[in-house]
Length: 228
Length: 48
Length: 239
Image (cartoon, rainbow over all chains, first blue to last red; front, top):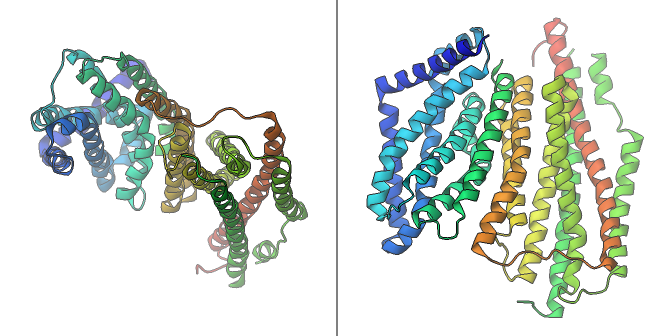
């Protein structure tokens, strides 16, 4: 298999998943609504003091996206499992990791779109001051989401095919995400205050290492884990 | 921060008690597991 | 069925029984040794004695998870049933010792710091390790197909072990940024011997419980396999 044909396979899987999603939109709307609702509930739980809400904002937004993104990963396999299409997909020639990468891209687009809709809501609700470091903030959001979606896509490939899948995925996924949560929240919080201690760079490096390690490990392990 | 000398023994004894309870409790579980496995094999072997 | 009958009547190996007895005596003896030889520490007074169970338990937990990591790799490499059973056994044993480590750390912390819990890097990373392997055991119990269970849990075991240093590093940075007390690092020489003796005794205990856990898992799995074989050959009806 050449590199080119593998890239085509990745694109095909991603496109297929995103098309299914675009046609129904039901899932996207539900996840986005749930996330917005959680932002509101956090506000009630921790508010109404504006200053303390603003301090907690970075943590709230990251937790919200992790919890609601959880729902998206099941869907990634659910539709195919119900139709028995996963077996067919596996029968096609080529590397198994292309299926993983395709699904990863689809999930990444999904979660990033949810975030793009969610962040303005959070800025308004929590009165977050957006400082001068917007490009870096986008980088942190992308890297954090990437790490979270990589592991989510990998673990969902197992959890969606087991009993008790609704409980199992967060049980497996969340403890693994603690470094991502810490790094993303700390980096976002620091950047929102203009990074006075110069600590954001270190967290960004941690995010990059996490993403690289687990992307590599997932690509290597996915072939073994997905086969019947 | 540091409490009195008398108090410290409560914590030490508590810690050793917890350790021994855990170790003995887990040993009991292992004993049950081994017995259950043997009995399982016997049951499966019984219905020839 | 002859094989199943033989399997059910299989006696535990003598070395395992002997090792278990020795391990228990060694742990008790090492603790007595620790109590006799070490004077009260200046700052920590006699709470220092807790170290003789806390630290060996932590070492055992760590070792058990190295075994899980290694056995998982071997399973994915060779697909051997033994490696899967070893990973299963070590994960459970490791979870028990991690739980014990956390309990003891908490008891000591209550005395030394006045709180049951603090977001100390080592305490927090240990807690994360504990949750990761509880998830591992949950995955195992929710998956019936043996091969699938073995492959999946091998993946989860490797990922979990890879994550441990990253968790530790991130929690440490997080803590230093927020500047709060950390746990004591230095230890005077008079306690080192007692700690080592206790460590070795706990190591024997680790090998013993691992051996028993492995034996139970092996008999269970072997019985299932023999039974399935008999059904397939029509020698036995499905129960």
